[in-house]
Image (tube, rainbow, N blue to C red; front, top):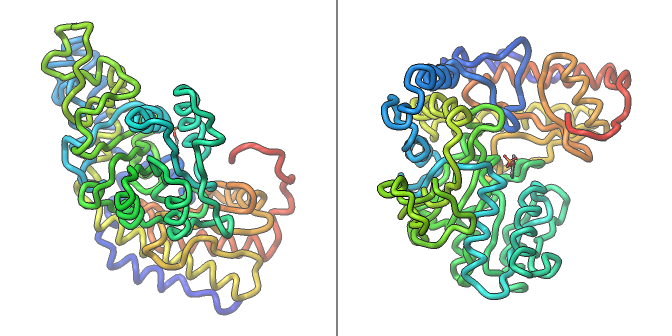
Length: 425
Ligand SMILES: *Cc1c(COP(=O)(O)O)cnc(C)c1O
C-alpha cells in the first residue's frame, strides 16, 4: 500500500506533546500496550505509594490508621479529594470505595428507595454487570426487572442516540436514568450534560457509569448537576488489578440513606463510639461500606498524583489527538480496500479514549496483534479495541500499531490462529 501516511508525521505530533515525559514512569515491556481501558499498567509512582503503605504496615502495624503519612482512617476521603478534579466535583462529593459493581448496587438502590414502583432506564449496549446489579436491586424490592428496567435500543449496534434516550424518558417515565459516559465496546462518548438536563426537566434522576471515561475524558459532574456516578480505579486511572473504585454523589443528595450501609460510611467523628445506630457521614463518604482496602487503594494515590501533575484537560487533549490520528490511519486502510472499519464516532466530542476497529476476523486479528507484542482486546462480535492511553502512548506508537495491523491484513497472518472458542482475550 503506497499511500499509507508516513511515520514522520507521527513524530511531528510527538515533538509538540507536553505529556511525553510521563511515559518513562510506566513499566511497559516490549511492544505496545493498547489496553489501558481494561487494565492500566504499573507506574513507578503507583509502586512507590504501594511500597510506602506496605512499609507503614510493617513499621506501624495498627497505628497506621492514625499515624501513617496519609492516615489510613481518612485515606478513602483523601483519594476521593484527589479524584474530584478529574470528574469535576467538589471534594466532599467524591470518595473511593468498594468496586464499581457494588457502587452501582448501593447508589441505584439508594435512589430506588425514594420512590414507589420505580423504573430505571438503561441502554442495550451496556456493560453487563450494570444490568445485573440494577436487576438485583429491583428484585430485592419486589419489582419484576423485566418490567421495571427499560433499555434504550441502539439503532446500529454501536451507538446510542441521545434523542432516543429522550424519547424513552417520555415513553416509560423512569425515575432514574443510568447510562455509561462511554460505551465500552464502540467507545462512543454520550452527552452527559444533555441527558442530565433532559432528565431533570422531567423530574428524573441522572446517574452515570464513568468506568470508560474517568482518567481519559474531563467531566463536570457538579456543574452539570449529575445526581450520582461510579467508576473503576484500574482502567485509565492505573490503580492496579481490582483497585478500589470511586463514586460521586451530588451534594443535593447528602443525607439520603445508603442502600448498603456499613460502618465505614458512618460519620467519622463518632465511628469509633461503636453505636449500634448508624449515623451516615454527611457527604459522599456515607456510601462506603467496610474498611478501606489499603493495599488496593495505595497504588491509586501515586497514580492520581500523576494526573494532578498532568492535568485532566491536557490528558483529554492528547487523548483526542491520539484517537483522531488512529481513526485517520484506520480510515486510510479502509480506503485502500482493507476489510477494516472504524466503529467509533468520528466527531471527537462523541468519542472516549479508545477506538473500535471492526473486522470480520476481529478475534484472530487481535491474536495476531498480540503475537507481535501489541496488547489489544477483542470484544464480540467483530471489534478490536485499541486504546492509546495518553500518559504513556505516543503518536508514533499509534502509527506502529496500525502499520502492524496493515501487515497482518496484507499477509493474512491471522489465519494461522484457530477461530474463537469463546472467552475474553
Ligand atoms: C469495567 C467496568 C465495570 C467493572 O466493574 P467491577 O465491579 O470493577 O468488576 C463495570 N461497568 C462498566 C461500564 C465497566 O466498563
